[in-house]
Amino acid sequence: MKAITSEDFRAKDTVRLSKIPTRMTTEMNREELAEKLLNIQQKLSKRQDAMYAHNRHAVLICLQGMDTSGKDSLIREVFKEFNPRGVVVHSFKTPTSAELEHDYLWRHYIALPEKGKFAVFNRTHYENILVTRVHPEYILGENLPGIEKVTDIPEDFWQERMKQINHFEKYIAQNGTQVLKFYLHISKEEQRQRLLHRLENAEDNWKFSVGDLKEREHWEDYMQYYEEAINTTSTQHAPWYIVPADDKEISRYIVAKIIWETLEQLTDIAEPELDPKVKANIDFYKNQLKP
Image (cartoon, rainbow, N blue to C red):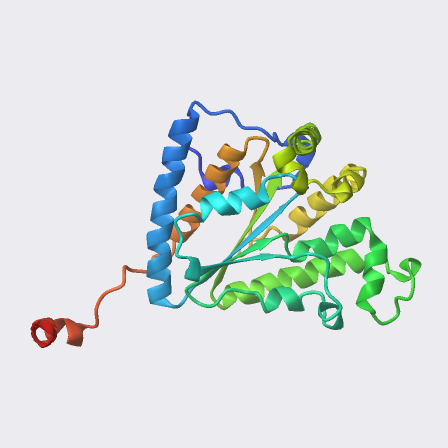
C-alpha cells in the first residue's frame, strides 16, 4: 500500500460524497496503526511545545460529520500526548440566548486559539449552513432584519453565508491561524450499526439520543448541503479533508498525519532555545544555586 498523504484526502475539484469511499483498506494491523499513531502524537506534542515558545502561529482544527462519526473519540486519541494547557476543545451545541444576541460567527470567533495554541471545534461554524439549512426555522431565533418567517429567507441566503465564512477563515488565516477542516465521512449503514450498538449495550445507552434518529431521516439533505459547503469553502488557506470514518482507528491516524504534515511545513518554527545572554552566564547561575 502506498504511503498515506494529506493530498489523498484534500477536497479537490467537485466533491460528490456518494462517490467517495467511507472505508479505507490498509495492510497495517491494529497494533501497527496504534504504533504509527503514537509516533505522530509524540511528534505533534513536541511541535506544540515549539509553537508555544515561538508564539506566532495558532492552529484551528474543525471537525464535522454526521452523528456517531467518531468526533469525540478522535479528539481523545489524536490529542492524547498534548500538554492540556496548549489545546482547548469547544463543543458547540444549540446557541444560547446570550449567543443569539450576537451574529452567528461571534461565539466561534471568541473561541479561536491564542498564538502558540490549538483549538478544536467539535461541530463548528458550519452548523450555521448545515443544521439551520435542514431546519430553516432555527434561523428565526437569530432575529435577523427582514426575516419574520421561514419564507422570508432569501434564495441567496446560504450562498451569502458561505461567502461570509470564507472571508472569516481567510481573515484568521492571514493573522496566523492555520485552519484545517475535517469531514468524517461515515456511511448510513455504519451509523445504523453504531446507533444500534448504543441501544444494545447498557454501558453505552447514555450516548443515545432520540434526536439522532430524527436527524437520520434527513440524511440525503445533509449529504447535499455538506457537498455544497465543502465545494464552496475548501480553499488554499482553509482546506477541507474528507476522511473515511467507518473505521475509527484509520480515521484517527489519517487526521493526525494531516495535522502533522501541515505543521511540518511551518519552517519558521524552531525548537525553543535559551536566551543567548542567559546561556553565556549559565555557569554563574548554576553556582548561585549550589549549597
